[in-house]
Length: 288
Image (cartoon, rainbow, N blue to C red):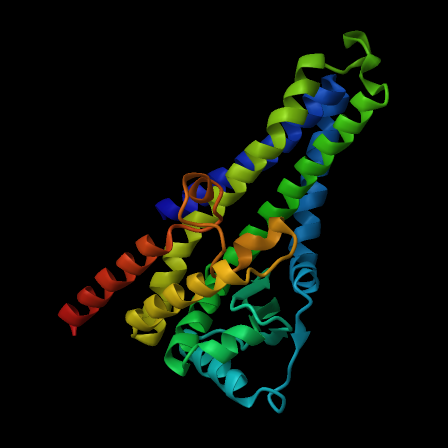
């Protein structure tokens, strides 16, 4: 419950930031109303289109049971165990090793894996990865992350438009016409950074829960721990490049090991995730 409250608070902060930017830049009640309208539109758009956008960003291709029987059976088996509808299955044409889930709820969900992850992971580790992504679907993390990515993108776009207006003479307005010069400057400099940090914080709060859900679903926390270590090693050599706003959807990212990398990473440190999984393994062994 605490984790869900934290996520809701971070999403509210992200939408509030978008509204505040509009108020400071445009000024007065007009800016406030435009900001509220932008927040509403971006949230509504991401609700209904999040799965299509994410799949298109990573060029994921749908596959049938006939085309990928082993993968499809694994997703079906784990979905039955989790008591959710079997999501649509996609393969990303990339030799890097990664995976993600998307969709606003279990009835409108998809799981996508790269060709690379199918090549390097043994069955038990791949099962742990699939269970991790199904847990994101169960917890509605896929919707949360999509909303965060869309709102953060809107904030960055607005800041970029303000920057262009300053360069090409749009900063000559006075306060009586609505624009606040200090607000404009802060928007250009700080808003995209703040949006990124909030978005990454939202993603980090969900990864430990998804790891734990995978461990409980498969009964094999160590398999997912091994998979995360293997995926991190390969991601450093061959990252899955796409729009950075959608990187939090992936099971692992490629920025780690340095201070700035950890600060702007969309995931907790892999070492911390592995340690949590091994601790959970000990707990499950004790209970068993």
